[in-house]
Image 1 (cartoon, one colour):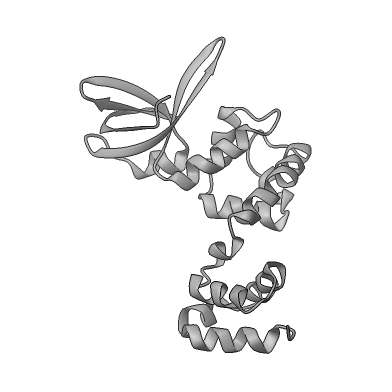
Image 2: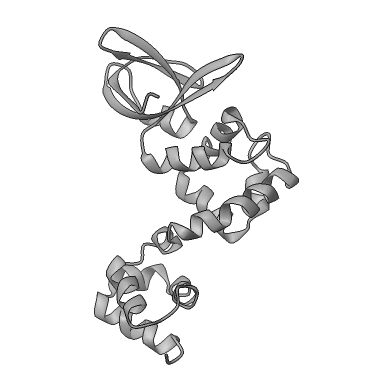
Length: 191
């Protein structure tokens, strides 16, 4: 219904911002991560999710499409509503939450208020496959070119991901694409 809102932050509340858009104030419920990045009287572009239920009509705002996407995946899980999804996104940035899900780290998710062991396990079970499809290599800053070259040479995604996870962050920062490929070839089994 409402895909985005662009306007000045008129007011900040504990869990929301009021955005002045052409003289109309929209209340957007936001995560603490988003709230901490915005300032009053500054203009922002918010991606939105319009949540409608028989007794509720609410807008949720996000500064990035990635945060919006994870929010929408979370509320698609049975028993997780928008307030719980925001609680999951509030204490940590999206990359940390996605990493915890991909690693199956239920203990990380249980630290979030309102998330118990069973809910954490359900989140991991339902989202792990969806996040892998979005290429978990991006979570560890692997150059896209390295990944594509290995795929084009016939290596399987699972094998590439396993090898790339073992490469240290220092190697990622210091090595060229050619050096990273050599390192991968040393660790990958022949095709």
